Image 1 (cartoon, rainbow, N blue to C red):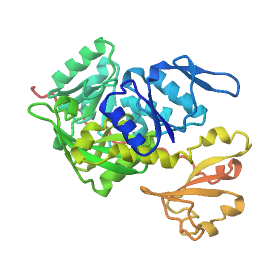
Image 2 (image 1 turned 60 degrees about the horizontal axis):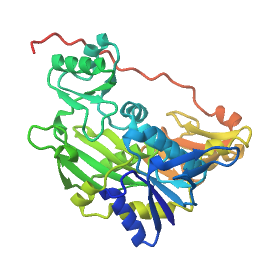
Image 3 (image 1 turned 120 degrees about the vertical axis):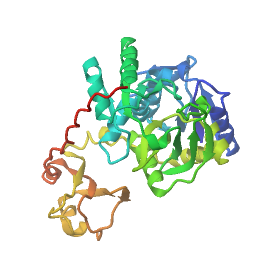
Image 4 (image 1 turned 180 degrees about the vertical axis):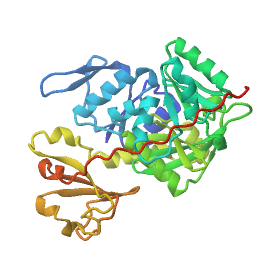
Length: 395
């Protein structure tokens, strides 16, 4: 395999470990500075130049795109995708995960734990927003912050209001987030590769610092995650469209709460804490995937007029509930079930004798006109009752 690692820091621990590990496995590896690429576009022939010379052929790309070059970096990854080069993380996944608000918006529609969060622009909305997340103390986050920078704990409502007002006056976008008290000063970093958590560590803040990031002096230790935490981490990475990711979770009283999904997680801290070969797991995964690159179904369905992919939901009381796939009549309508989603379990290419249950979701390929009749009408989601306004208390 010929592998390109996109990184501006070839001598940093992560880039060096990945290159050395890949070479020790017999692969050819180059660490390429993302900013040295040129993107060429012409009909039917997307191309890339590196340092003004046409780029040679690569089998796979491992993007490690820094936050400061997200736009150009994802454009380079997108060009590799258009050239049918396997990319360990998609350009869309990197973009989704880089924006804290956008990533939480995507995760919020799924049944996956996240801290209650609000985003406001108008000064008049600040106090009601703080009330909706449970009042002080609250966490205030800059959307563009990384490595714990731009994360502030406000102990009182007045302090939170003053901090938000100050940040907004400098044209900063901020999130107001519920403070998960039981997880104060510690979090979990799960390192996801493909559909597995290959390593996990707990990070604990030191002294009066509440941020547990290693760059803030946090102490790390290896941790064995239970099934709930592992499944949550893998699902979060998959929802974001990432195959290699660091998933940061708080240990809430109701289970894991996703804080962030990192598309370029560092290796030094987690390899030091767990003594595991995380770099090797990444390289081995990429090598195994190179022969079976993920296809963008939407682009390839444009030539099949009238056909497409749709997700069918089996609501409680449906005529399909309790029937096997063979008896459901779907196959007679040339509707092929690609995967069956049951809770957090994904069953690929389900057997004909698989019995359908209420709340199953079927990812199907077939004639859109026929599938449209099977998609249930949208039911408006019941909204939470309004939060009673908190009485003013002395700070």
